[in-house]
Length: 124
Image 1 (cartoon, one colour):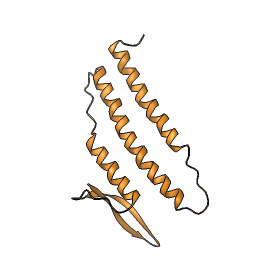
Image 2: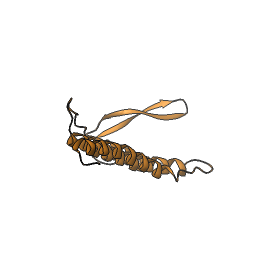
Image 3: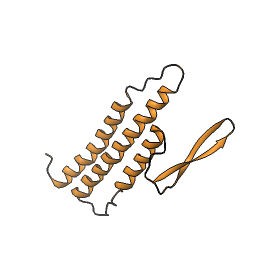
Image 4: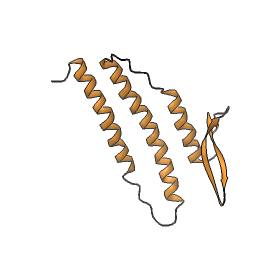
């Protein structure tokens, strides 16, 4: 797994990047756990290169990859935004964030899948 490196900045701590971690145990907070799970999801779904002469299967594979990666990102962002809203004085409204990301996933993967169907000759 990977763990963020904590760097001290006057008055604040800041996460700067990932380092290898031998344990799969949660980091200790919902945000840390979500981060570790997101990195694991990325590692489990590496992109397959598209050859110079791509076919519809290559494009469907890429669309599936985007769905998996952006699905993991959506789960991670939900935790980050919830944590931010709970720990910020006043009110932060992120209620549309999940819908916006779902639309993005649909638009991007749908465009690639449509191109794959065009390539396969299954779209009129």
